[in-house]
Length: 233
Image 1 (cartoon, rainbow, N blue to C red):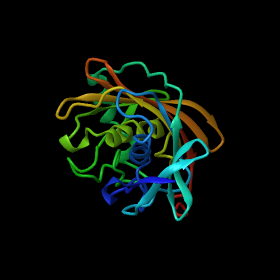
Image 2: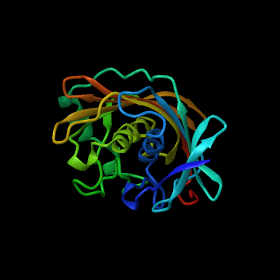
Image 3: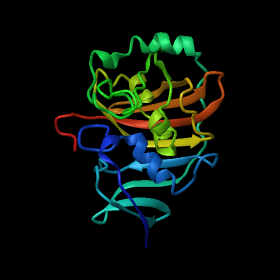
Image 4: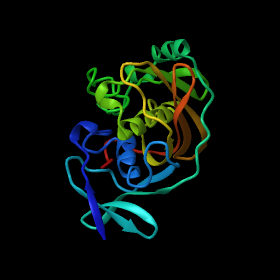
């Protein structure tokens, strides 16, 4: 039975024409657990459409967001992710200066990591290399970006950059995250991402959001799938 609806505003895009995976995952995850709650596992079954109402209800033990009866997003309680080791703000700033996305970005207008987004519009999180398989970036949230959905978006793309999305386009297939507290607007934070494993076109990654002092605010694990941007949709 339908209980509510969910709409992804166009500004929260990832690839052109579809929602940012982290933002969309956070939107449906909020129907399962909020800030300070347990982890939520979200699977993205189809590219989330923009400015299109999705029906939210229950199906086979999942909270689902559907369009014309087809499941777009599904969420359920998940296992708490293990946070990544802390990276200090200075090291994160140095890493971000070498962000691969400045030179080559498959989705330059992405809400989370797109350099084409203006300050206060996108999150502008630019994860650069710290060491092999580990990236980090500083992030000072705009007042509009301290929501649960934006926090999920903040711990989304760093995993893909750790996995090399600049060399081979990929999209989010699933994400399990726990948000312990929301970030504070106007204050510098640090986002980190790391590769867990690679199995053909599938990449398993992890991300963490910390305060500048190292307090964990949110942690996540993701599965990414390599795609052809020309045929994605």
